[in-house]
Image (cartoon, rainbow, N blue to C red; front, side, top):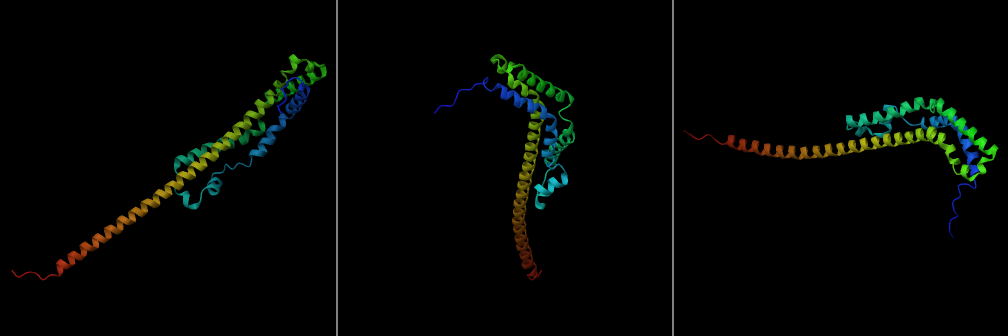
Length: 198
């Protein structure tokens, strides 16, 4: 069974109707995205408490904390200006594109194959004004989580190396103590001998 052939013209009127709805909903998109992303934790105390055990906290490197802070601050700034994005230009443009879609339906031009094949362009304001910030948010989250996981791994590795060094040091110390005791015992034996008569 073969798939049906693509026909970008047959359902152009449906595509235009969807684009009109999407363009008219664009002003609501920032509020939706803001609510969705407001749950991302950017507070430094909570990030450390939620992602690092007490044992690992002393092993976190300053460079890793700086990387995490850079990502967290970027997300915080996006959260703060989320309600105002997209700006007035995009909000006006999406209304214009919605009106163009209404005109195409009303005039019947959408039934013309030459016009119908270009109808997906009516989605441009939505894709650029809402899609691009959403993609930036997703990338910011992935980068923040990646930095946290990387810092946790480095802290765990540092702790492991520290324990290994302590174990090595304990072995060396025990060896030193054993040799020192032998030396002390040998000196006691020498001191315990009676001095030879001159």
